[in-house]
Amino acid sequence: MAPTGARINAVIFDYGGVLTTPGRTAIAAWTQAERIKPDTFSATLKDWLSRRAAPGNPLHRLETGEMPVEEFNRILADRLRTEDGRPVEPEGLLARLFSFMRSDPMMLRLVEELQGLGVPTGLLSNSWGNNYPWQELDGLFDEVVVSGDVGRRKPDPEIYRLALERLALPAEQAVFVDDGVPNIEAARLLGMHTVLHENAEQTRRDLADLVPELEAERSQETA
Image (cartoon, rainbow, N blue to C red; front, top):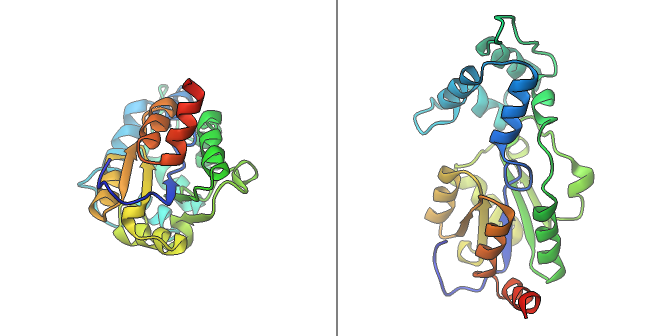
Protein backbone atom coordinates (compact mmCIF):
# COMPACT_ATOMS: atom_id res chain seq x y z
CA MET A 1 0.00 0.00 0.00
CA ALA A 2 1.11 3.65 0.29
CA PRO A 3 -0.26 7.15 0.79
CA THR A 4 -3.85 7.59 1.92
CA GLY A 5 -6.44 10.28 1.32
CA ALA A 6 -6.34 10.80 -2.45
CA ARG A 7 -9.10 9.28 -4.56
CA ILE A 8 -7.89 6.48 -6.82
CA ASN A 9 -8.58 7.27 -10.46
CA ALA A 10 -6.65 4.48 -12.19
CA VAL A 11 -5.12 1.06 -11.57
CA ILE A 12 -1.94 0.17 -13.48
CA PHE A 13 -0.98 -3.49 -13.86
CA ASP A 14 2.22 -5.31 -14.65
CA TYR A 15 1.81 -8.18 -17.13
CA GLY A 16 4.04 -11.23 -16.56
CA GLY A 17 3.42 -12.85 -13.18
CA VAL A 18 0.43 -10.59 -12.49
CA LEU A 19 -1.99 -11.13 -15.36
CA THR A 20 -0.46 -14.55 -15.98
CA THR A 21 0.60 -17.62 -14.08
CA PRO A 22 3.57 -16.88 -11.80
CA GLY A 23 6.86 -16.57 -13.65
CA ARG A 24 8.43 -19.24 -11.44
CA THR A 25 5.68 -21.69 -12.46
CA ALA A 26 6.29 -21.11 -16.16
CA ILE A 27 10.06 -21.31 -15.71
CA ALA A 28 9.80 -24.57 -13.77
CA ALA A 29 7.64 -26.14 -16.48
CA TRP A 30 9.96 -24.92 -19.24
CA THR A 31 13.19 -26.08 -17.61
CA GLN A 32 11.64 -29.46 -16.91
CA ALA A 33 10.35 -29.84 -20.48
CA GLU A 34 13.76 -29.00 -21.97
CA ARG A 35 15.74 -30.70 -19.19
CA ILE A 36 17.57 -27.45 -18.47
CA LYS A 37 19.38 -27.28 -15.16
CA PRO A 38 17.28 -24.77 -13.18
CA ASP A 39 20.29 -23.40 -11.34
CA THR A 40 21.91 -22.25 -14.59
CA PHE A 41 18.85 -20.14 -15.39
CA SER A 42 18.43 -18.80 -11.85
CA ALA A 43 22.10 -17.82 -11.74
CA THR A 44 21.70 -15.96 -15.01
CA LEU A 45 18.63 -14.11 -13.74
CA LYS A 46 20.51 -13.18 -10.58
CA ASP A 47 23.34 -11.72 -12.65
CA TRP A 48 20.96 -9.75 -14.85
CA LEU A 49 18.03 -8.86 -12.57
CA SER A 50 19.29 -8.54 -9.00
CA ARG A 51 19.77 -5.17 -7.34
CA ARG A 52 23.51 -5.56 -8.01
CA ALA A 53 23.07 -6.36 -11.70
CA ALA A 54 25.38 -4.40 -13.98
CA PRO A 55 23.55 -1.69 -15.94
CA GLY A 56 23.27 -2.41 -19.63
CA ASN A 57 23.46 -6.18 -19.27
CA PRO A 58 21.76 -8.31 -21.96
CA LEU A 59 18.40 -8.49 -20.17
CA HIS A 60 18.31 -4.75 -19.56
CA ARG A 61 19.07 -4.18 -23.24
CA LEU A 62 16.40 -6.67 -24.29
CA GLU A 63 13.79 -4.99 -22.09
CA THR A 64 14.58 -1.52 -23.46
CA GLY A 65 14.48 -2.72 -27.06
CA GLU A 66 18.22 -2.23 -27.64
CA MET A 67 18.93 -5.92 -28.24
CA PRO A 68 17.07 -8.08 -30.78
CA VAL A 69 15.38 -11.18 -29.41
CA GLU A 70 17.49 -13.44 -31.63
CA GLU A 71 20.74 -12.07 -30.19
CA PHE A 72 19.43 -12.38 -26.64
CA ASN A 73 18.37 -15.98 -27.30
CA ARG A 74 21.93 -16.82 -28.35
CA ILE A 75 23.46 -15.17 -25.28
CA LEU A 76 20.99 -16.82 -22.93
CA ALA A 77 21.42 -20.25 -24.52
CA ASP A 78 25.18 -19.99 -23.97
CA ARG A 79 24.55 -19.47 -20.24
CA LEU A 80 22.30 -22.51 -19.86
CA ARG A 81 23.14 -26.18 -19.44
CA THR A 82 20.96 -29.25 -19.82
CA GLU A 83 20.88 -32.22 -17.47
CA ASP A 84 22.72 -34.36 -20.02
CA GLY A 85 25.24 -31.68 -20.94
CA ARG A 86 23.82 -30.91 -24.37
CA PRO A 87 23.61 -27.32 -25.63
CA VAL A 88 20.31 -25.48 -25.47
CA GLU A 89 18.79 -24.61 -28.85
CA PRO A 90 18.85 -20.79 -29.13
CA GLU A 91 16.35 -20.41 -31.94
CA GLY A 92 12.94 -19.58 -30.49
CA LEU A 93 14.22 -19.87 -26.92
CA LEU A 94 12.10 -17.10 -25.38
CA ALA A 95 9.05 -18.18 -27.36
CA ARG A 96 9.40 -21.66 -25.90
CA LEU A 97 9.71 -20.26 -22.38
CA PHE A 98 6.65 -18.03 -22.78
CA SER A 99 4.59 -20.90 -24.17
CA PHE A 100 4.36 -22.08 -20.55
CA MET A 101 3.04 -18.72 -19.32
CA ARG A 102 -0.76 -18.73 -19.29
CA SER A 103 -3.15 -15.84 -18.75
CA ASP A 104 -4.84 -15.74 -15.34
CA PRO A 105 -8.61 -15.58 -16.01
CA MET A 106 -9.35 -14.16 -12.55
CA MET A 107 -6.95 -11.27 -13.05
CA LEU A 108 -8.30 -10.49 -16.51
CA ARG A 109 -11.81 -10.45 -15.04
CA LEU A 110 -10.60 -8.06 -12.35
CA VAL A 111 -9.34 -5.65 -15.02
CA GLU A 112 -12.68 -5.95 -16.83
CA GLU A 113 -14.52 -5.34 -13.57
CA LEU A 114 -12.58 -2.15 -12.91
CA GLN A 115 -13.31 -0.87 -16.39
CA GLY A 116 -16.98 -1.76 -15.97
CA LEU A 117 -17.01 0.32 -12.79
CA GLY A 118 -15.57 3.28 -14.68
CA VAL A 119 -12.06 3.00 -13.20
CA PRO A 120 -9.39 3.55 -15.90
CA THR A 121 -6.73 0.86 -16.22
CA GLY A 122 -3.20 0.81 -17.55
CA LEU A 123 -0.57 -1.77 -18.47
CA LEU A 124 3.07 -1.11 -17.53
CA SER A 125 5.34 -3.98 -18.49
CA ASN A 126 8.99 -4.80 -18.98
CA SER A 127 9.03 -6.62 -22.28
CA TRP A 128 11.06 -9.70 -23.14
CA GLY A 129 10.60 -9.18 -26.85
CA ASN A 130 7.04 -7.78 -26.85
CA ASN A 131 5.60 -11.30 -26.82
CA TYR A 132 2.08 -10.44 -25.56
CA PRO A 133 -1.28 -12.09 -26.36
CA TRP A 134 -2.78 -8.84 -27.60
CA GLN A 135 -5.89 -10.66 -28.77
CA GLU A 136 -6.71 -11.34 -25.10
CA LEU A 137 -5.61 -7.93 -23.85
CA ASP A 138 -7.25 -5.79 -26.53
CA GLY A 139 -9.68 -3.32 -24.99
CA LEU A 140 -8.70 -4.02 -21.38
CA PHE A 141 -6.48 -0.98 -20.90
CA ASP A 142 -6.87 2.74 -21.42
CA GLU A 143 -3.10 3.14 -21.78
CA VAL A 144 -0.28 0.66 -22.47
CA VAL A 145 3.39 1.33 -21.75
CA VAL A 146 5.80 -1.44 -22.80
CA SER A 147 9.49 -1.02 -21.99
CA GLY A 148 10.72 -2.14 -25.41
CA ASP A 149 8.58 0.52 -27.09
CA VAL A 150 9.68 3.45 -24.91
CA GLY A 151 13.33 2.60 -24.20
CA ARG A 152 12.87 2.59 -20.42
CA ARG A 153 12.39 -0.27 -17.99
CA LYS A 154 11.11 -0.67 -14.46
CA PRO A 155 12.28 0.34 -11.91
CA ASP A 156 13.43 3.48 -13.79
CA PRO A 157 11.17 6.25 -12.41
CA GLU A 158 10.75 7.72 -15.88
CA ILE A 159 8.69 4.78 -17.15
CA TYR A 160 6.22 5.23 -14.27
CA ARG A 161 6.03 8.94 -14.95
CA LEU A 162 5.29 8.19 -18.59
CA ALA A 163 2.41 5.89 -17.64
CA LEU A 164 1.01 8.52 -15.28
CA GLU A 165 1.39 11.22 -17.93
CA ARG A 166 -0.54 9.15 -20.47
CA LEU A 167 -3.31 8.60 -17.93
CA ALA A 168 -3.18 12.33 -17.05
CA LEU A 169 -2.94 11.59 -13.33
CA PRO A 170 -0.72 12.55 -10.41
CA ALA A 171 1.01 9.63 -8.70
CA GLU A 172 -1.20 9.73 -5.60
CA GLN A 173 -4.30 8.99 -7.68
CA ALA A 174 -2.97 5.74 -9.15
CA VAL A 175 -2.41 2.22 -7.87
CA PHE A 176 0.38 0.09 -9.30
CA VAL A 177 0.14 -3.72 -9.13
CA ASP A 178 3.34 -5.74 -9.65
CA ASP A 179 4.87 -8.98 -8.41
CA GLY A 180 8.40 -7.54 -8.14
CA VAL A 181 9.45 -5.83 -4.92
CA PRO A 182 11.96 -3.40 -6.58
CA ASN A 183 9.26 -2.30 -9.03
CA ILE A 184 6.79 -1.75 -6.20
CA GLU A 185 9.35 0.21 -4.19
CA ALA A 186 10.10 2.50 -7.15
CA ALA A 187 6.39 3.24 -7.66
CA ARG A 188 5.92 3.94 -3.95
CA LEU A 189 8.83 6.39 -3.95
CA LEU A 190 7.02 8.36 -6.64
CA GLY A 191 3.94 8.57 -4.41
CA MET A 192 1.84 5.88 -6.05
CA HIS A 193 -0.29 3.46 -4.09
CA THR A 194 0.96 -0.09 -4.56
CA VAL A 195 -0.20 -3.68 -4.36
CA LEU A 196 2.38 -6.46 -4.31
CA HIS A 197 0.70 -9.25 -6.27
CA GLU A 198 0.79 -12.78 -4.89
CA ASN A 199 -2.49 -14.20 -6.17
CA ALA A 200 -5.72 -12.95 -7.71
CA GLU A 201 -7.82 -13.25 -4.56
CA GLN A 202 -5.42 -11.26 -2.40
CA THR A 203 -4.88 -8.60 -5.06
CA ARG A 204 -8.63 -8.08 -5.40
CA ARG A 205 -8.95 -7.69 -1.64
CA ASP A 206 -6.07 -5.23 -1.52
CA LEU A 207 -7.49 -3.19 -4.40
CA ALA A 208 -10.94 -3.18 -2.81
CA ASP A 209 -9.37 -1.45 0.19
CA LEU A 210 -8.15 1.34 -2.10
CA VAL A 211 -10.80 1.66 -4.80
CA PRO A 212 -14.24 2.61 -3.44
CA GLU A 213 -16.09 1.28 -6.48
CA LEU A 214 -14.50 -2.14 -6.12
CA GLU A 215 -15.15 -2.17 -2.37
CA ALA A 216 -18.85 -1.46 -3.02
CA GLU A 217 -18.94 -4.31 -5.52
CA ARG A 218 -17.31 -6.62 -2.96
CA SER A 219 -19.88 -5.62 -0.34
CA GLN A 220 -22.74 -6.48 -2.70
CA GLU A 221 -21.20 -9.88 -3.43
CA THR A 222 -20.93 -10.75 0.27
CA ALA A 223 -24.32 -9.27 1.30
